[in-house]
Image 1 (spheres, rainbow, N blue to C red):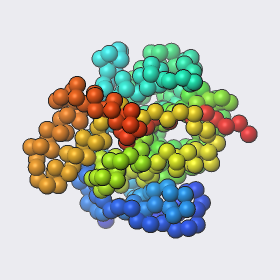
Image 2: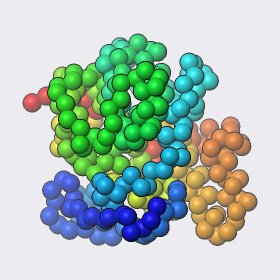
Image 3: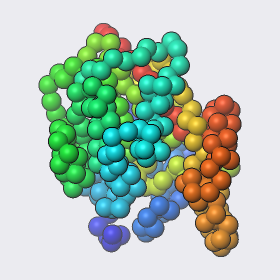
Image 4: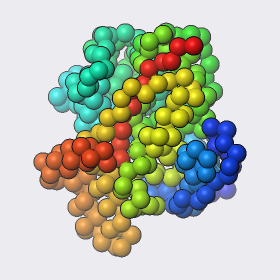
Length: 316
């Protein structure tokens, strides 16, 4: 990617605040090494953090190469959760196996996945009896899901239109923080969901202690593709504005953010062997049992830096 092809835009707080911003941190693209320094600011009124200035909608695609992690990890179409990729088992179990009361066990219905990537979650949900559809930003990645027989619309959620779709369940796994216009997107999903429908989102938790410790080396900062950096408080404000009510927040039992951030810090100090070792632990290639225990501890402390949010559609 050539730097001159990236157009940056400055945008105000999407919640309509007028009090101005303060700088939280400067950082760069640690995931793919693209050039540039990016700023995260915090709204002085509501506390919502966002990347500003940011790549505009025409430029953001430059930061999603073909080897982007979610594009590749969602190509696992094995027909058993026992043998599926780790992320798919965790997401499925969070929704349907470890879903704590008072949330219901959802019977199969009509499902929409925002940012479905290559389609393995659609595949599993279809096997469980759901009628599934997806939306994917990348045309080439969407074609992979389509080749498996699934209906996937291509484009940014902001640009897509449609009639009332009556979805029982809409999901988005680490998608909300990537959207240029999250408020209007959430309002659009509200219109697409049936009365009593559910919206389930996973995203980083910028209220985690690890963000305050690691700052620009926090793995989940992921500049510049993460355009917003939510806490549970600012997420609740945005969801309410768009017509959604938070019913439950679950902290994922996943220490990836912490371990990857430690690995970044080691690389900054040129401790490459230690960085590689910690990265292997984070990816489950070493000390798997320790990784599991650490994930459970962080989730119990509400500090894993990754949350799954269950919301219901507020009726007018």
